[in-house]
Amino acid sequence: MYIRYWLIKSLYSVAYKKLGSHMKAIAALMRLRALYRAAYSHKMYKKVAYVDGKYYLQVYGPAVPSRLMEQVQADEINRAFPFDEHRSLRVVLLAITTKCPLNCEHCFEWHNLGRAEEMTKDDLLKIIADYQDYGTSQIVFGGGEPMIRFKDLIYLLQNSGTDSDFWMYTSGLLLDRDRARKLKSAGLRGVMVSLDNHIPAAHDAFRGKPGMYEQAIKAAQSAISEGLVTGLALCPKREYATRENIGAYMEVARSLGVAFVQILEPRNAGRYMDKDVQLNMEQTGMLDSLMDEYNSRSKYRSYPIIRSPNSVKRRIGCVAGDRGLYINSLGEIQKCPFCAKSYGNALERDPASVLNEMRSQACPAVRSEMLEAIQ
Ligand code: SF4
Image 1 (cartoon, rainbow, N blue to C red):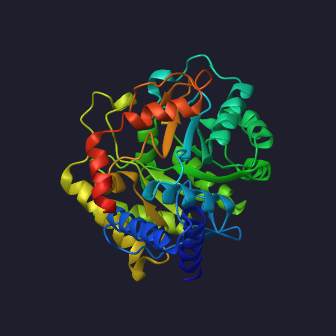
Image 2: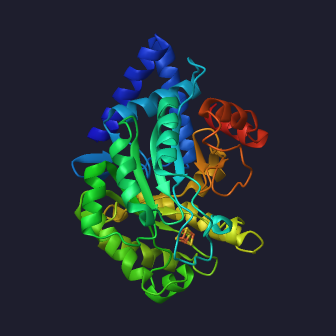
């Protein structure tokens, strides 16, 4: 209740400050409410995660309350009721390495793995600084397996400014309590650990490396113990995407005590490029309603918050290339990990010109879905 009160109070005060009128501030809040209701199927989600003395609503999202959350709110108000041509970014996913000893079925960086490392730690630092200057609230390290560059991760965290939060997505490789502690004290905010099945042997087979289930569990436990915001990322294969399986998975997630479960549906990209892997409509419908149920029903209060970018995309359209972008392990900029079109190299292009180009190429169908959602 306190969190909802703070969010509304803060939204109003940011809107009033930016728009200069009570009526406009209320109108902006009404549009954002309509957008929220469209994104979450008119359900009011009741859950909030509490980690290390702070509240969180989203995977790769800022704490509530916080300066970064106010920045995100101002940006959303700007989109609903434009007052500034500059729109900032919510998330930059930054792949920091081409190295990974796993052999995952669905890897979207598959074609880059094993190549020579293109970006030095100072190249990465420059990219981070550029996107912080542009206004990016969350920077997420990935790969390859980012823990392979553990020393560089610490260097990046210690030498980057405080204008964004830092997260990492990982298979869990090498992540124990000692490293989790070092990452946290260097400035890491949260960790998403990939776990793709509640059955250990099936997870290991999917990841192409024995022992990865055990390692992922240990990584999540270590991150939780050291006060990192921790979630599990699940890529549900077609044969796994049943209500029973996801229910069993959520039991594992609850017993671990993670804050979030993020469902990332299989896509025709990377190693899955020419494979028939997409979920059918019955399965996506089941995942959409499961997300709503776990996030809004009181009987699921003790379970982690479920986030599903695909469910939100089905409801309000795609926000990649507008609120977020992806920089692959070679430094090439993409709208998201699944859209292979390159917008040039992050070491050569400034964020403003990239974002202008990406935004001008938003799918028209997506744009009209967004407009319908907020009208
Ligand atoms: S999906 Fe991640 S962990 Fe798996 S092979 Fe690709 S980079 Fe490695």
